[in-house]
Image (cartoon, one colour):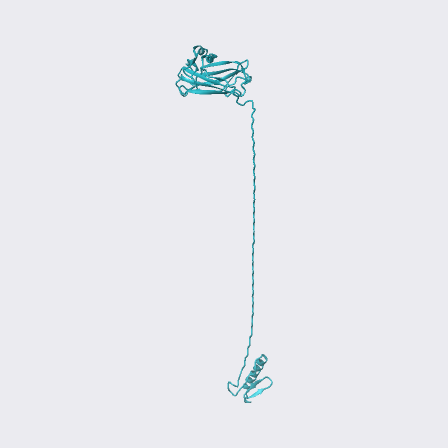
Length: 285
């Protein structure tokens, strides 16, 4: 064996005559030389012992991979919402409503202080039968005073009317001593159908309170009020300035009233009619 100082390899001494081994050894020597150049240490060769042939392969791979990933995600969401809503609503509503209503309307109700209670024959004597339809009805009717009936006190006009057909009328009236301004006046009078006229409750008779104004006696009334036998006293009312019923014409003048009257009428519905007893009492305005 010999050491090749050029490439650090040890070569076994081979017989000169062994050409093949020489070639092998030459290849091994070249290989060892290449490994030495690549960083491999000298390869020791012994006399056939493993201790003499040492291959030291020191591979120190120090791979220090320090991956420090510090991800500090600080998400601080401070929502400080201070909503101070101070609503001071001081509503002082001082409503002083002084409503002084002085009504000087000439059409307001006026009380003339007249009261006729028919307490005596004298008060009744001023009333007369004014007309009838048919005309013969007036001639057959009687108008008297009685103390057997009345409202609120005894004493009343009493009419005996011989009705026998539909739409028969009879009117009584009083002529005032002088023309009276009844603007704003409401006249009232009481009527009582004691008996008769009709036996048909669906065809009652009626009564109207009327006035006449001016020299031409222009007529106006309060409209129809039902009369039914046995029901007692009813009150007729007429607003002289604004009559609720019929008015003859535009010459009607509530400031010039001359006559006050009552009309008693049978129904327009066919029925069995008969003589009626009617009382009239308590005129006031």
